[in-house]
Image (cartoon, rainbow over all chains, first blue to last red):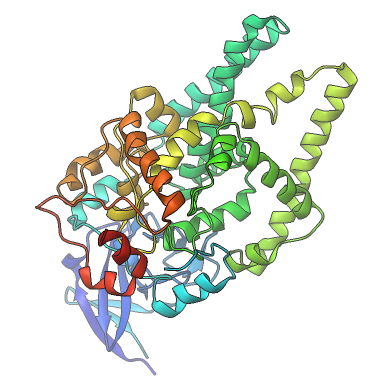
Length: 104
Length: 362
């Protein structure tokens, strides 16, 4: 069952960048792609504890700031060493300039 | 602290996990996101330029050296070629392993494979060991890349200026991996699904060295080994000289790179060979920043870092006496002074790091 949670405003995230969103003790990452689409994933790298919000977005890749592990943030797919485990992704919708993620 | 045990599966490894030193939160200087994004930005230009200069120079030097061989006039050309092979290869391995040197992924990967071969470092094994080095920098029992263990083995250090110890271990590791054996220690940091790649690479390399040996025997000359493999010995000195400065003599078991890493100002030639890894505090604190942006990062955060050593010689003047003192008292270390503007290191941490407290109390 869908459980939409308001994460941020559209203008809070620069194009080709991400921000951190903490909710109910968990950390998420909200991305804005170069073609102005929004995506959401877990906010901590699956390799070791590092906040992806300190990382670098390049096209559709988020690179972890600690060991440069790379994920496709649209699918969560781990793209090579040192990350092996995919990142969990969440559905996103934008309404009235606000970004919502489905934590259901 | 008692005698250190550097085994990755020994008592210090267990203690590091129990005390929270393993995979800990490390200190980072505050840098505004906008500025950090600009610093992290990738580009191909600088690394393409440097790689053309690097490999082009190697080809030219090797060509002249072979042309002059066996005359003694070939020696300086081999020595220069060797440094580009056995020392510049180290920094290219390092930067491309991080994936930051080039913007284009395949370029990073291609140079990483070439440099890994030059340095005789299995590209799979060492990618994972270096990830651990960044997670647990100079944490005893956790960091597999501690160059100078305590008490320092000075003979080993001297031999390594000629690559002798490294070559010995690299050869053993290659033969073992080629036989299909991944060691217990390697298994602590290489995921199971990656381990077959370790074996495959080792077998390819073994075939290359076997072909080199066959050529040497067929031609009755050591020339093939002066070009392949040999430079890992006679050209290693520069990467050892600069590499020892990275952490040598500084604190272990602390979670602040300002205290266990060293930034050293260097001449432009050494910086080219070393690809700016002389900004080592900055690199460890922000490994996402490419080598060509490290001087800019240094300018941005130097107010929060210890004063850099002013030259390679200055670094050795500080480090060598510390090594000699550690021979008698292995808990001794160089305590880095933070500038008045810096955020202090968490003093309470020293209460749970007895070796740090002991040395500081001296």
